[in-house]
Length: 393
Ligand SMILES: Cc1ncc(COP(=O)(O)O)c(C=O)c1O
Image 1 (cartoon, protein in one colour):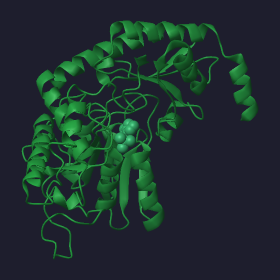
Image 2 (image 1 turned 30 degrees about the vertical axis):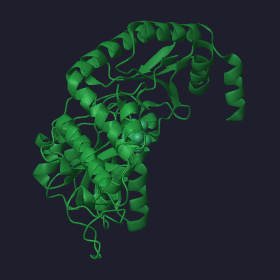
Image 3 (image 1 turned 180 degrees about the horizontal axis):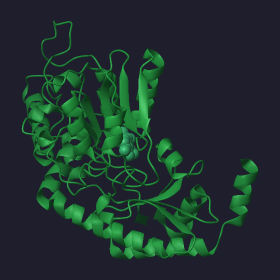
């Protein structure tokens, strides 16, 4: 099988992830932070070690600023809802995932707040000047994805963060498509809140993610419950990470993610990035040569993460992905990729695109085979499938 859906979830995971998860069900099967006996303490220390490895990887000096969540969606919901107690104005971009858009639209409906979605022209990432122009006296929050999960284009996070910082506006970054892809030093970036999943570029398991909360960022916790200490207090703890980690943690997921972080610390994200740019260039070059294939991606491979969206003339995106799977043993994602506004900007509604996303384990031969498969599809339009889709529409 050729797996080209790493933007949805990395496959395979980093070496050692499965073993660490299995160990957590035996050697580390106490309740971390909730108990004083040997097994609980040993598990607490193992969770701390995983947090410290991730902090090291992400350039965070104080590991307690990294809070474990169930994924990027949970971290983004926490960051958005916890930053917006009442109405106001929020800026985001066309490239946002529904994990950002839906919480913002929900907030807008409930409070009468306003969301400005900065439009994009084609594949171009948003411009910092547009952000500057959109700021209003009541702007409380700017949310930006670090890279589009549709085109792979990297967004100008540092420039926008500097604007936000100068204006005293909170800045939240969705790092879902850049964590583990691009070397990061979160403490030195002009970012207040940063969210990511553990299961994509960080090569960890599903069901665990991270929220980075810069010291001094006031954030209301969404989930309230036991912290394992100060139980007589009616309010949740003030300190991170416990403020945002109510209840029992996902220890198997966290220890698996810790093992993935150790792996990335050994191999180096710089090396992963160099290989990703190579693969991205090979996919783009191959697909651009095929008549009838349209690419929606950052044209310079160095300006994007390893994501290429495309359409094939004569093929509905879902049918093309189905054929790639069935006839060529290639796993690719098709559709809107939970980013409807991106497809509106690209003109690819309602069917969306086919998306190839390589990972560190992808080989040159696999890319060549995938390009060959797309070339075959382009030469054999799916007329029956298109007729069916048209009659359904
Ligand atoms: C840009 C972006 N943000 C957020 C998410 C949500 O991540 P998760 O489903 O792991 O919570 C994704 C997942 O595809 C994504 O690509």
